[in-house]
Length: 93
Image (cartoon, rainbow, N blue to C red):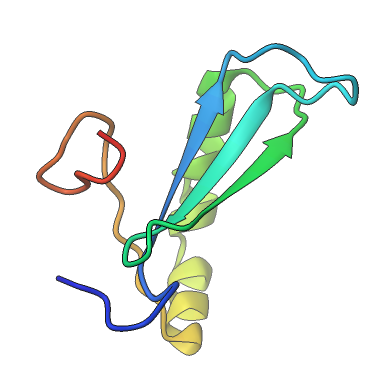
């Protein structure tokens, strides 16, 4: 499926294990527009391990009925993919 508008379809991922910045941020949240390949890189500070961040990212909190209804109201669609699985998301790989 190809997007017709900028930021209509985005992908999100986390880059972890980087050197700590002066503001103690060592995690980068990457958000990429599939059409234009424009990206936002958001430095994040967290006390959670990578495993805990992933658990929060795909937990019941994010996949709950509330989250689904919120995205329906906004006109957006959730499409989860896994790392190194180009059949669902060839953008990052």
